[in-house]
Length: 203
Image (tube, rainbow, N blue to C red; front, side, top):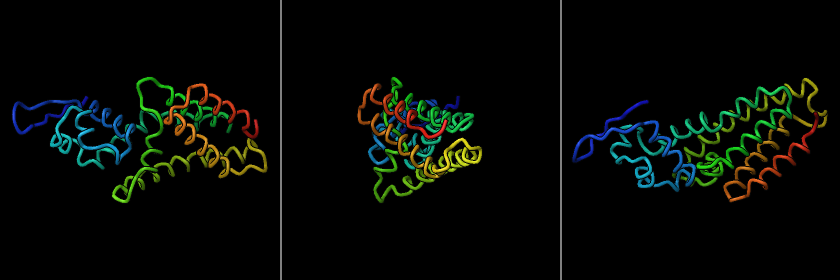
């Protein structure tokens, strides 16, 4: 556990756990998006001063990138596991169940940090939007490679393209997160998962 010693303008130095502070920053970004999260929101949630934030994490953009790293490592770990499924349907099932689980998890914000930050960024945060899109493209490329393998193995029908099925699955996953963020009930989200799997092409 990394401990940062901050030196406020007055009083005694204050120590704080960098990992805990970053986890709180992630919650703020996840709830409000990059632009919606003010420095006051962040420092209050993290329990540190602005100088301490800058000293430990750099500027707001740098803090967001670190929070995005944490989000991918801790919240999206199911994606790597999904790619190891034996069948294309198994991949889809693990991805859908992982996304569903995130939306019904008690204590965490709903929705998707990547979707929120890629759709709500103005020109002043274009670099953040580009970063989110770049990371999504990387994960989509891994999923495409897996579906191309499924196609080669005869695990997908002839009329279904690997690119098409990836775009379809990505759209469903993003839609699931958007509906979760909009307050859809666990049962409504479960219906999305079940229906998608019922309609999945191939075995």
